[in-house]
Length: 156
Image (tube, rainbow, N blue to C red; front, side, top):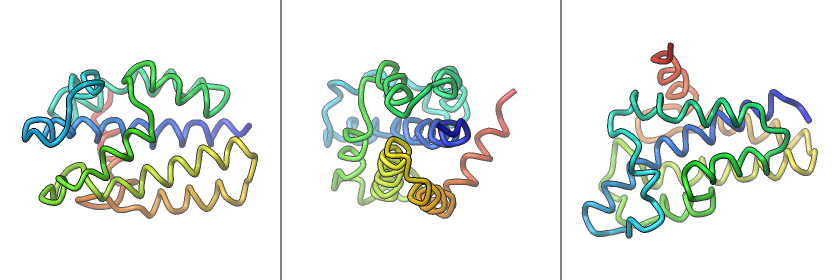
């Protein structure tokens, strides 16, 4: 298994969990139950502080030997998996969220889930295609790749 693929997967999964902290807006407005999401919403509201809080999990994930192990690390830390994150981002009540969370993240989660499957199956072409799509993916305020770089710039 290509260790660069695991690192890339850890980066994108970290970013998704970081963004998921915005579920607190749905919860606040009574559009989503907080049950099971306590560890996600316990992340700091400040994006930079939240990013720093995700780093110990991201670093552990870099050392994973498989996508399954990597996802287990995030599941253990946050209590929800990618399928549940996708469903949360699909919630129709995100429609007014222009600068965080919501529908812009649905496709990103789908692409990461496909990337997991491509790594597990050893399909190099599909892995490359998933990485290309993730690098070009846009979230609410720009490119995902640029968001990752911007957030990483605040790390020590």
